[in-house]
Image (cartoon, rainbow, N blue to C red; front, side, top):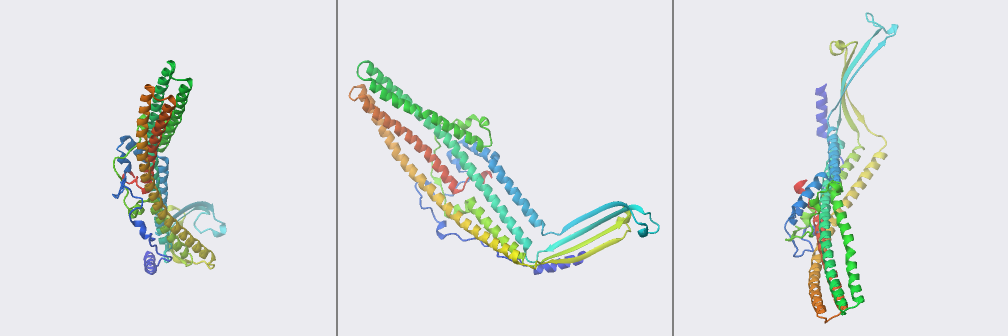
Length: 466
């Protein structure tokens, strides 16, 4: 019996062919593999570092990123989706193997007098045991295409998990940078308030000796209170960044270690950002790889649907025995066996053809998604490069403006002490300097954000700790 099954299976396997299209990796625009357009001296063409956050040389940030990759709830959910996809792949592979079932049952009953076997009691046990084996011959590749589709799903789930890690690393770094830049802007705001307090004190002393008016002190006091009003909003902004950091690292706000908020200076880089080229970008971006794997899976499902247009051929064998006790079943009791094949072929092909058409449409959708992911990756990276380069140019101009404003306010204070200018001129100089200081601090914070945006667009941030 087993010799017959093996011989028949081998014959079917030799004649088997998988229907449906064979997958071919989609092409990409030829210009997509070259250097980026918006390259500036602030970046280099060196390969992108997987652990890019270490470029900031901040051990606290390094530990927070490690905590996020280990405990973030989105990362854990993505890992669970990978496990699910791999389990389905194991199931698809197992479908290609012979399926065996063991049945056993026992009943106690009474036999009608007319059916009683001479020499046996009318009331007795009836024990039955049997083994059946079935195997679907994958003549037209329905099962093998199913395995291909499951493999594509696993690849897509793994790439999606990498995309989650990229996002979590970027958001963790952004939250840490936001907290640090808010602390620095808070220091700037408090320093401006102290300087305005000094100007207010000087103006009041001049007024006390008849060299100023109440209007002079009111103007300086109004500016001082206006800048003081910036302090609470900056404190709230810093708190919000720290609370976001707690969420990203899988903690409650109360459990976030104090060292996470100890930094009071904006994150800064001392070297150009390595960006590589377009070809490396598309190979590295997890969303592009996920789209490509989904396209492979949808292509394989065309074959699964197409196979339903053809007959399914199954081979089977069964054997068993029935007796009134265990010794009869496994001993000299009556033995039965059966071996044969089954062909199942749907007469109405309409539903199967509809499933083929749906699978083909799904494949075209997946191809469009892949093409879109390629274009989106290039657009996001070029946009981030441009934003970073122009942010640095803006910061250079703001730094020069801030230095000029500081020089102007120092001159104005000296001249007011000498009585050469009135308080209104000093007020204008103070306001200009305060605005320049605050704007420069905001520009530094924006640069840190554009750096994170660039690193995220480049698709790095998971390889070394995945």
